[in-house]
Picture: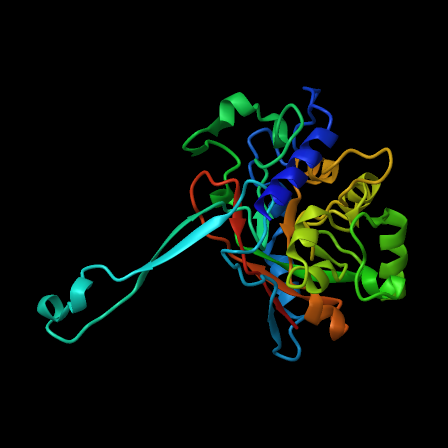
Length: 314
């Protein structure tokens, strides 16, 4: 499987044309801004989001992260459980005065696996969000700007667009491109409206259908948005955009499109966060199209991405 995943990653990399430096657009939030669309999280919008909780229902939008699950190469993780100071049957009673035992865990991992948020320093073209030059911010020991620790708690109105339902299928297939026109039609059919500061999630059925049954296929391609759909999503002025796929953008890309260029549109050009591998199946099954979204990611200084478990409440 490892060779297959590496091959898939190399294929995607070769399909992308080299990013060339280009004129950047300074952020509408100011030359020193590092949080982009998170500026839309205001007290008024937080209070409005709380009013969406009517049944007291909660749902984890993060899937369980398995050390053996596939990920975009060369990402992965290794987990070890250790019991310090307890070799050869020894307990900590000598230290604590009671028959104490405990476990700890050690992990070596990439933060960009499983359910994750892409920060504004993750992907750019020539420069990153708000004209940040990679030479100035990309230190080996962590980003010096645009780090994931800067993102405030994301509390927002969440909306779900069920594209699988709109097409009348359980799951879209790898390479199935979703257009802005289709997103608009599905939203209207499902009664979904958009407001500034929303979190917009797309349900394709891909992860529910493929991750467990065919993990190699799951990570080798995916349904997702085409380049123009990312522009359409950005026009709705959301805080974040996500899907139940590992990369949100369609893979392989639609004819004439650039691979993963939706990331440039959202992250670099608009400061909009990307939420990947979101657990949207229950929301789709129960017809939950509007909910309160809450995320407080681990604040590791200088990190680019983070494994997350946002909560949907309604």
